[in-house]
Image 1 (cartoon, rainbow, N blue to C red):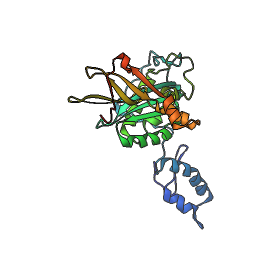
Image 2: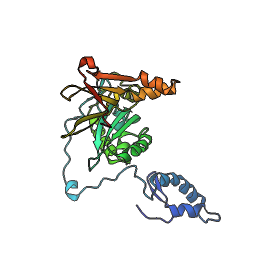
Image 3: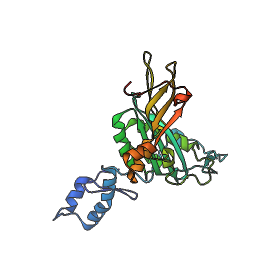
Image 4: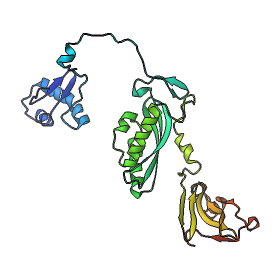
Length: 293
């Protein structure tokens, strides 16, 4: 590309230096009307690229002299891509827009102190829905908030090459890209896939991520803090000091009931449950608070 003080043109791609734009738009500029028009047309490219570089629409192929001296040989087989299962159909994927499906997977940061579970609903190569769940690092929650705004509307190739703030989220995006372009998705054999909003079904009632938080030591044994059912209030222990059950409260449902008008006490009592052999009739001899005892 030849340098110019005002503009350069490669096919239909206009590159306008930022300084030239400023000069041409200033009052009393000596630039011709044609130059000003081209600068205005190129302004969008400058803003998109945020630099003086505009992507070429086509590339001139350069061959070595050795290749130029070779005689041409006709290509025989037309061996296209193998079909992959997508939303109940077998699809030969030639472009990003050929990819559709709902998929999820996990990623982790380099020091492996946090992880992300990422769920994407992709239609015609575009991310229509994203569910970002993180655990293990306090900063990841804010990264997830930003990634949740970044991802929808991007193609999966754009998302793959976008900084999603946290490396664990970036790795999860990479793993999901590899899964779905090879046809490994949760909707590979589901006709028409899943509707937008299906990610909320993964969260269940109350729309909270399902996490398991367990702490244990050799000297004092295990403490259940949170499980799929919810926040653990008490552990039931038998005569051998073994955990045989627990009491939990479903925080998501409790907060939902409070929002809908129930008092905190009513909502709490409604959403308390037990699992295992929790009653004394079932063998429990004492109950302990896993956070205090």
